[in-house]
Length: 456
Image 1 (cartoon, rainbow, N blue to C red):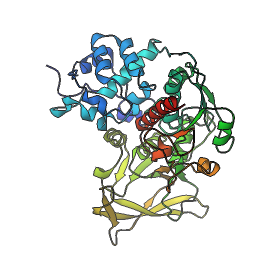
Image 2: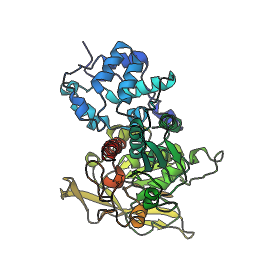
Image 3: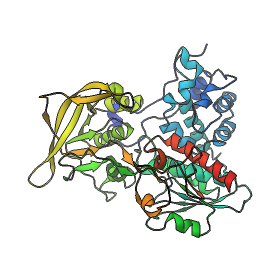
Image 4: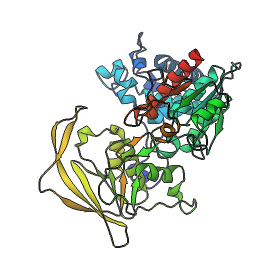
C-alpha cells in the first residue's frame, strides 16, 4: 500500500546550511523518486493539470517515472515547460497542481514538484536535453526581459519556427531567476543551463540592453520585428515612506538580493561587491522575498528579525520558506509595524522604531486589516534594514511608449492572451500583473507566444 505521506526530501542540516549558500534541498535519489511516483493514482481526468499554469502533463510524466524511463518523463514535461529544473525548485506546487491531487484528500498530495526536479536534474546529468529546431517560419520577435515570462515566450516562439531576440537590461540573462532568488534555493549554474537549452533552439540574447533607454519598443518594430513581447517584470521596489529610509544601511530587497545573487557579494572579497549587514538586521515584510533576504543576511552572520504587521497566518510566504527560515535562526516579530528608521551622527542606521498591531476588519482582499495598538511603541536596535514589501513595474517602457495602454498603478494593460492596445505588442508576467510567481509569469509568456503566432 502506498504511503499517505510524501517521500521526505533530503536537506542540509539547518545549523550547517545557515553558514553557506549551497542548495538546501538535496533532491531525490532514483529510489526515492520511484517511491513517490508509486503514490500517484494515475487519475483518468488528471485534475492536477488544471492547477498548473503551463499545463504540464503531470500524469504522463509520473507514469514514465514509474516505468523507469526518465528521458520520456523529461520529454513529457519539456513539451509544455521550458524551465523544469527551475519550476521543480521554486514553483508553489502546494497551492497549484498539488492542491488538486486526489491523494491529498486523505493524506498528503503526490510530491509533483519534487518529481519534476528529479526528472530535470536527471536529464541534465545524463545530457538528455535535446532542444528542437523546427523549420524557420520567416517571422521575427523581440522579447523584452529574460525572466520567466520572457524565457518561456522566447522558447515557445522558437518551437514554432520564429527567430527570437531577447533583450536583457543586466549583464547576465535570467532576470529574477538570477538576481532575485538566492543560490541556496536556485543555483545560478542551473539557471544558465536551462537558458543554454533555449539558446540551442536558436534564440539570441542581447545583454546590457535597457529597452526604453538603449532602444525603444517602437524602434524594435521599426527594425523589422513582426511582434514584441514585453516581459520586463516588476523591478521597481516599493517603500513604506517612513522617516529614515535614505540612511546608509537601508536596502530595498531588490538591491540587497541583486548584490548577493548576481554580483556574488556573499563571496567578498573574492568577488569585489561588498554588502554591509552589521550584527543585527531587520527585514520588513512577510513574503517569499522577505524570507530570501532574511536567510541571506543570516548566512552573512547577522542576527535577523522579520518584522511583519500581520500575524503569521496572513503571511504570503510559502510555508516551507517560513519553516526553513525559522530553522536557520531567523527571528519573527509578528503584528509589528515600523514607524521610522533612526540614524547615528554619521548617517548610518542605528535602530528602527516600531508599534505593535492588532488585527481589525478585513480589507478588500479579505485579510484582516492591522491597526496600531495604542501605547505600544518600542525601539529595535539594528544596523541594517531591508525593505521587502513588494515591487511595481518600472515606468521606463510606459514613458517611452506613449501609445501603450497602462493601468493607473503602472502595469501594462493586456488581455488574457497578452495582447495590448498597441499593434504587434504583447505583454505578460509581472509587468502586467504586478509581482507574482515564476510559474504564473511563465504561463503568461506561453499564452502570449501562442497568440503572437496565431495573429502574425
